[in-house]
Image 1 (cartoon, rainbow, N blue to C red):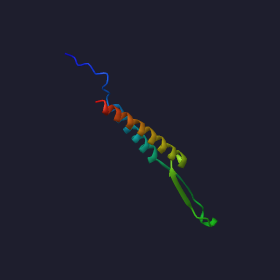
Image 2 (tube, rainbow, N blue to C red):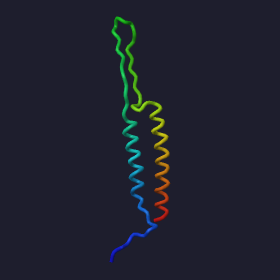
Image 3 (cartoon, helix red, strand yellow):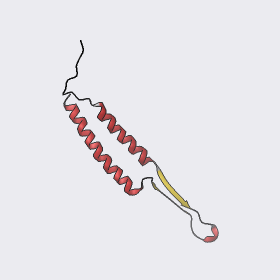
Image 4 (cartoon, helix red, strand yellow):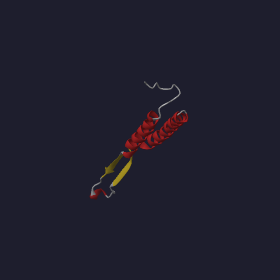
Length: 86
């Protein structure tokens, strides 16, 4: 006897996987940093400096964070809806 899926039953695992994927992509993109060093000779009298920052830049980091919050919020709502229908 085969069990047929009920039409109202929605799986929860796709939403959990999607949330974890967004978190993994955020960790990957926000984990990389870029920087540069400017070395001056001792004769020039200027000090050597180094700078570093996020690879996406400040604006890109904020845009990624805002988009991630919106996407995770949407996916969490879908996950809650799927859990409610179980």
